[in-house]
Length: 194
Image 1 (cartoon, rainbow, N blue to C red):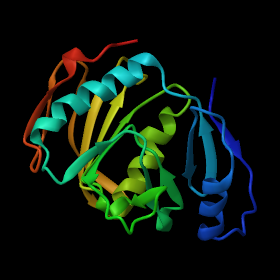
Image 2 (tube, rainbow, N blue to C red):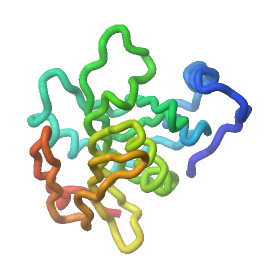
Image 3 (cartoon, rainbow, N blue to C red):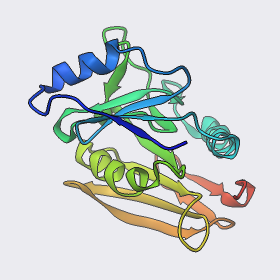
Image 4 (cartoon, one colour):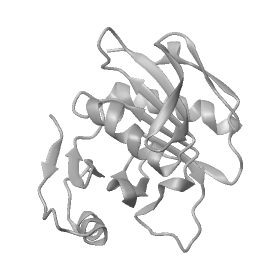
């Protein structure tokens, strides 16, 4: 099953778009994001996809601050990039009670992790890193199970405008060093392939 886009009025304001996103009844278990101002509905991730995200989360828990959390279904808002993204993992401080119940500002995130699915690989490789860089998120980790030539892992950092600098690019199997504040060597050999 592939992603589906929901058409809406191109003159719609960001607030109207978010209200529509929040109030619509979407299919159970689907991932509903706003990408470049377009609501995109994707099927629930596959088992291997979830295993990779869970293994990364397990390695991150011991190295994160007590007032941070690892979120698996939290939406991050980037109004300037017309984006409401739901990354596979978001590491961010625990939101204040005054924050929205449906999302947080993307600028609060310290790390975003995306694991590609066949249906959304282009968004994870191109669109989402640009939106996250625009928001100033320090690190973006892309685990690309569907990369041409075989699975890869790319760590982006040092955002400037809508562009990240590539800090690491390699195939599954080798380690990826997540810099401070994480100081973590992530072993990608434990990621399932295929």
